[in-house]
Figure 1 (cartoon, rainbow, N blue to C red):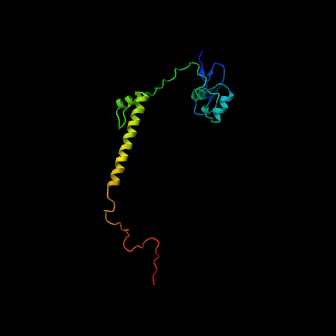
Figure 2: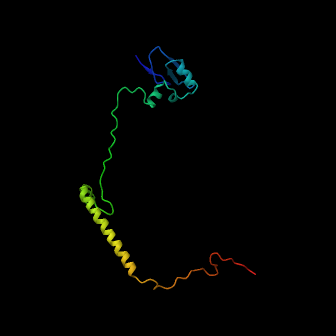
Figure 3: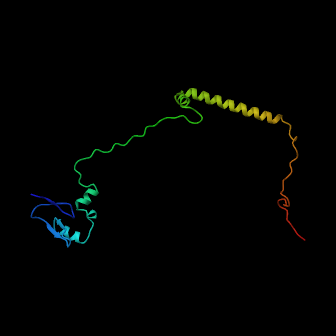
Length: 152
């Protein structure tokens, strides 16, 4: 017993069932029924007709065996050093206790304040007015702001 395949839908055509169509160039086509034959003769695309095997295969319908899903790789976080600090110093700062961190912060603040005070005191000691007098720079032939150019 030979079981054929429908040339349009891909369904099984058992002996003494279905329709056979012979084209002018002697090529034979087997169809499950007149519906498949009619759609074939209308030159319909079986991939766009929902009940055909080709459509179902293309759109992954009715797959009974559950295929094992592809395993996706998990992103692994890697810690690296930054331009200003290497990884060891970053980890040391992170693992430091909050009290130590607060003490270091307070020390840094007092140091910054002391430097600022020192800078202000040196600024106050410098004598002012020793430089050359400032003169407004005007490009050649230009008028100072606010003046009106009147020709007579």
